[in-house]
Image (cartoon, rainbow, N blue to C red):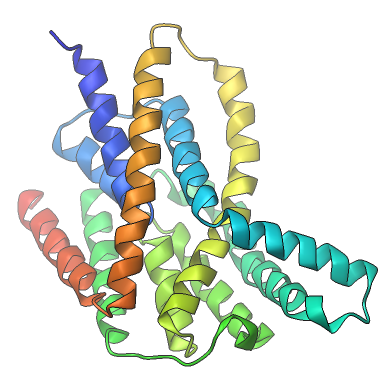
Length: 270
């Protein structure tokens, strides 16, 4: 008979992997799952490991873009007169500018908000996500990577600040902000996930220290490994699915889904 703990970690890995790239909030779905099945608080170690699994999957997808950006950025600094590397330098600067607001809000408010897992709060966040995605459903931007301005980056960063609210999708909110700034769908999707990396890296530095302090029970190593693999694989394919949906201009599907999910939560936890 399969140990119940293995099943739970497989399910959690699936939830994390499927929802991490999608504009539906992975943390919101994990909290909802815990509330519905009265699981209680999931150990922090697994959350760190599963988040890292998603990070690696998305890093693999964008590995060529990231390598090029880092290389061109450094070359531009060393050879400032070289116009070939200027677009990449500007793009990296836009990422830095857009990351500053969420870094500040995270330091100031995240610890105060992250334990707010009340289902009604999650429902409101899901409903807001539905509204945001509905607003941009017909927007067809024209800006490409090199057209993103520092003003665009600041606007997107200021909107991303609000994603520390539990249940409010980071990828969904940032994607909406990008589209509101007239970015092409593919450009908006790429910039959304470029902003995912600096925030995730900063979080991992703190989380890994916590992981080492807490340690991992040897009885959980194999369940964690299974959850890690499940999360990594599902994150990869979930992003590919999202990419196709964004390209086809069908974000309305996620708007409908998050709205129905919010209604379900209000009814279930009334």
